[in-house]
Image 1 (cartoon, rainbow over the protein chains, first blue to last red):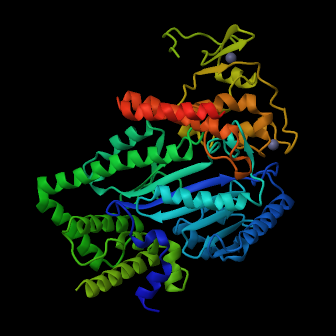
Image 2 (image 1 turned 60 degrees about the vertical axis):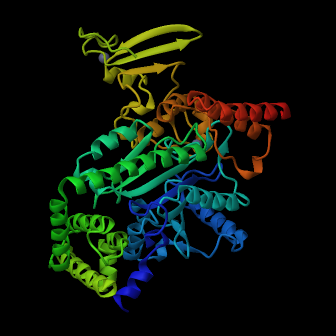
Image 3 (image 1 turned 120 degrees about the vertical axis):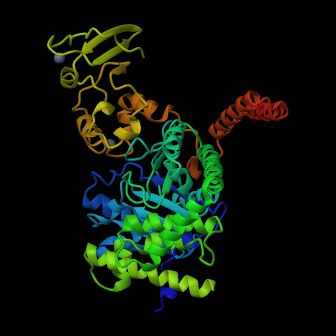
Length: 357
Length: 177
Ligand SMILES: [Zn+2]
Ligand SMILES: [Zn+2]
């Protein structure tokens, strides 16, 4: 299979680089936590309860009768560990969902815009992921899946506290909405910390892209709501949308400022990064992501030409350990991964140059 | 809540350690104050569930509440109290930071209320309801509440035309109740 075919096969809907505000917003995600009334939550449920949840899930999925699109039910115990990791790297399941996989499952829509984790922290985590700034659409899609399932399933809900979840931080709407953004100029000009401080006062949190950790890769940040109780889903989404628009405005202004103040130095940095990506023989994830961020900024500012902007989201997933090993068809230790990662990026850039001509 | 002065208040239980937990109890409108060190407060079950640093969402809570001041508006219940549906005890909950089943919310409502208030600054859900419950009076009331919030915002922005439109909408909904 050619690299191009492989990339196309790997791409989830959200990685396609389309959607509103695509110069900065990579993707929008909405996740709803739902549970079956009265059934113990997965953290304390025994095998029988968990098996019951799985049975109910299958029944509900069958009852939707294809109205939700082509959905596949995948028991994670039947998925090899490496393939589970691929799902994590594509943000379709959480890292926690790859551990102790007995009675854990994921439902995936064929375009991977919808994924439902079964028996994670809650019985159900319904997720919709869209490219670009598309919170409203992601919410509507999630909500329609929720509606379809609730025709069959008795979701835990109380009039006072709303949807009841394993962790009180999710109770109420059970909704976590987040925006994945590329903010190189705010980072470069050191305004990012101020931004993070400011949004936290609005009940929002900022973190890096992989895992719960604070590590930021490639200047990509996730902005999400912390408060789930006391506001409607629409209000939470509008609020997040408003704050996002302000962050976008600031990022764009910072880009123009950097460009106006020292274009030469910025061009130099971008071309150096491009040079390293195009020639390096060893690249660790962290370094590769930083360089990719620079090149992507160069593309957005019209400095680098002939490369599709989506190279960033494409490679940010493809250079992760599991994808790299899948691509090479073998297990690789860290030094070997650095070598293959560099090789993949070189090849990808050559492909872009050929096509961009 | 006001910060205590420099002179350390000593723990009223052991009289050895400085008091770091200040418990205000309001029972039948009677207010009592108790000053304890962290250890004694823990032993007496005075520390509310979220003060435990082992909590998964400890970081999220940072800044939302002042850990040195705890307000308990009712006597705390024994940590051995269990949810009759799933068997999770209050002590279990405090340890793992997660509930055992949806019924825990009703059974531990008292303990959860102050926590939810701190995390979400609210204890009333105003969002989506399952379809099976939809369309009732509660939905209309919720809609009215939502419009009222919008109205407040419109007034604050001095968008009077919009405010007038919202006020009419609220009136017509109220008549339907
Ligand atoms: Zn003491
Ligand atoms: Zn319970």
